[in-house]
Image (cartoon, rainbow, N blue to C red; front, side, top):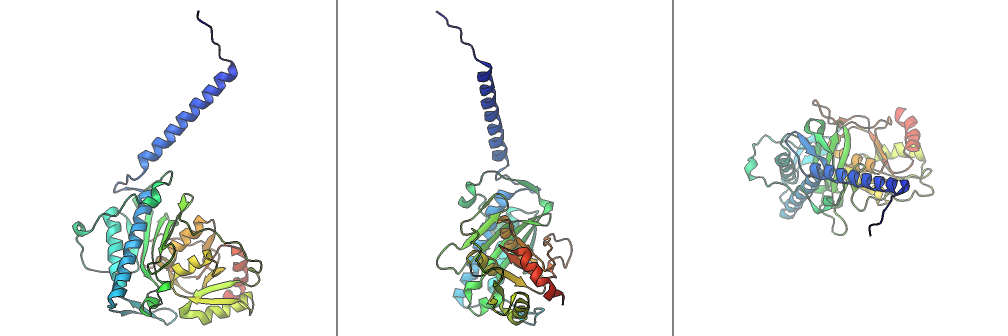
Length: 343
């Protein structure tokens, strides 16, 4: 005996919805799988680029540590900063520069890579090991984006806080990589090679993923009225004067080395804001800016403008108008600084 089975209109609707969801899910998975980890010379997977950026920051850090352990820094001077401080370069800078830039160019030969350091020596690509394109940290990230190589600028600081490195104030030293797309910082990696306890590498990819240790701390009750300001050791006095005039004489001013260290100090609660009042180079700040934007917070110049990281001509590496970085009360900090900086 054959029974007649009838499906109600509601049943048809349920089946239709479920089928549609299956199709959409299948298309979504297919799209991501087809784009993941498949860069071409002209089209770059950001997921793959994140993996290589982490790899290069850590490999550069190994060189920095090895040079320090060898006690052969071979320090030279590149001149003086605008504040009159010595601007040194060491073998740690150069060895890190080589491994980071050569590795990046090995993986992505058509990328524009801007490093703090420069060299005229030719390098043999066949001797450079291909970086890991699918590190464990990025495998679990769902989704990917493919970007034209011409729209990407990679900023590398092979050794941030070189002066402190020469003084063996090694807690301030970092290696950094930043990926900017059409001038916007999208990926930032900051690696602390001398950190003995805890997570050495912090990274973020805007609207996609970030490493542990980049959770925003709660705002302190008196933060707006009595902030802790972190500044460069090289010109503490100048910024201390600006901070006290802007926020009051009881404002705590914390001198530190390295822009990467200062940005991460906002996450560990050491400081509430990072202020720099003079020219600073973009390889110093791009990675930190990317990490802050991934937290939906800001680094701006002291005019309140977002910083553009395109590099089209010599001089584009300079950020002329200082900077303010914070995880809370950014606009309030800007307003209090404005009158003093303009004076």
